[in-house]
Amino acid sequence: MEIRELTKEIRDKSIKYAKPKELDRLSTSWYQEDLLYSGKGKTIFLILPTPGCSWALGPSGGCTMCSYISDCYLKPIENSKIIELFEKELNKWDYGEDYKNGDKIAIKLFASGSFLNPKEVPKEARDHILNKLANMEEISEIVVESRPEYVKEEVLDEIFDIINDKLFEISIGLESSNEETRLNKINKGFSNKSFEKAIKLIKEYKKNYNIKSKGYIFVKPILTSEQEAIEEAIETASYCENIGMDRVSCCPATIHRGTLIERLWRRGSYQPPWIWSTIEVINRIRQNVKIPALMDTSGFGSRRGPYNCKKCNKELKYRIIDSNFDQSQIEYDCECKKEWVAEVKFSDLNKSKTPIKHLPLY
Ligand code: SF4
Ligand SMILES: [Zn+2]
Image (tube, protein in one colour):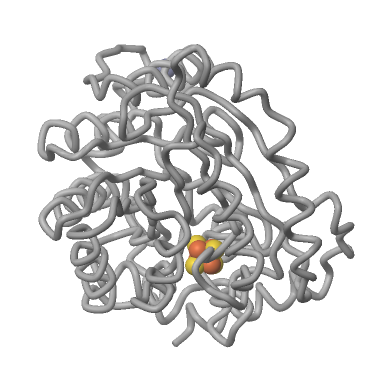
């Protein structure tokens, strides 16, 4: 299939020309306000150094919009190094003071892929990290990301043996509940059936543990009109609620380097969504579903991200961030809204009629 071959070709090229990475600079962290399960609190966001997402490094070439691999080491990393960098990042933040003042603290561990895949985060390093967090009374919620195929009984048993009753959330990039979109436009490589299998297992573990699941929803994959992107994201949130997930987080497209989405964007065949579309998505999701729904604002207002106009980009970004805390509706107006309304109305007319198989990509 052409999309997969192209993704693989683009991925191989970007890996071939990638500059060698200094291992010590691959971990990073930040600490900020966030919506926790227990309400408004603080979260330590911590990027662990990893060899890279197995899906992106494998024969599929990975997902069409993702270049996390370019921030990875691409070679195995010693457990002791992963642990050292994890501790270094954790020690940067004064969460102890906030905890004493009554704040709830969570940690989100990003592996630029799947935390539950031992090829990306080896068991020994994972155990050490979880042991450390299990013994920290300040941390009440631990959030990780994983593809659904690594959500296995054996791995969950290993994790809960260590963390016991701490809240543990597994975030999974479902991206879209539409299989055609997920498989052929995003190149995600898993079916609804395998995704639902992972969620079913998580639900079984709820009987004994404080386990949660979150679905990432990708807003506006390639070859999708503005209108289709809006409707699919909203449908996906309802699907997540219906199968028993605990919350959803929408990730509007931004143009990562060295991806198929970037190639289409450079050729004028793709544009990230309007910020208005993201507002329509999050407002309607919050009307339709009862689980918390978040909207990520990374890249908003930049050349490679969701964009409205210079007058309202920033204001809307802040309004979305605020609304994530109280799950409120966002009401706003600007002159550029008319253009967006017209684009959504006529987006099917503007959409390329070129079949997926015959994309003019060379
Ligand atoms: S989106 Fe996730 S699964 Fe897809 S290539 Fe990126 S890290 Fe891997
Ligand atoms: Zn505007």
